[in-house]
Length: 201
Image (tube, rainbow, N blue to C red):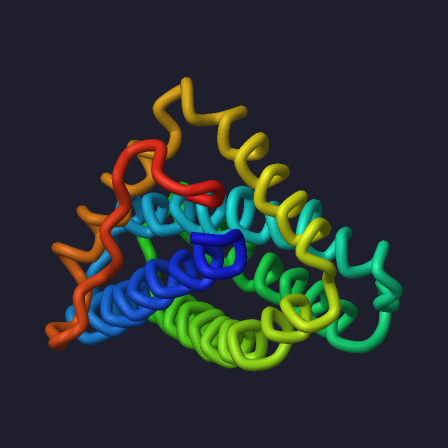
């Protein structure tokens, strides 16, 4: 599997996780619940997997290779993707603030959670579609085979930095637990990841 294919597989896991987040936020709102610890687990997965690992590989490796090949770094498709990464971080910051709140959630807090969770999910769904349908194919068309091979090798090194710490397994276990508890029942199973598999997780 090449780097782009693995990044797309990571998208599938992220999509399942954000659907679970939306279901969690809806349940909290409907039941008037207060589960700051569980929201904190979602924030951990989003920040450590979706942002640090997945977006990290995109920004530091794939996008960087595209810029080297002549794509503008702050406009065009890469500029749009970077802007949306930043928008997502703002929404996740709201979720983190609610997860770390010292006092129980009020009705307003639960509404704020629902808005942030749904906003993040809507942003990521559209963002992922743009990457899968437009940006990644663009990379495949415009980067030379040698450059794409280097992207894959750089992903391997990026992952190797955390593989020894058990980070890969920890994040996939966390995702599995969140999906088991909150994911809407559908016929689609989240992608399976073996420990240490692939260049990009």
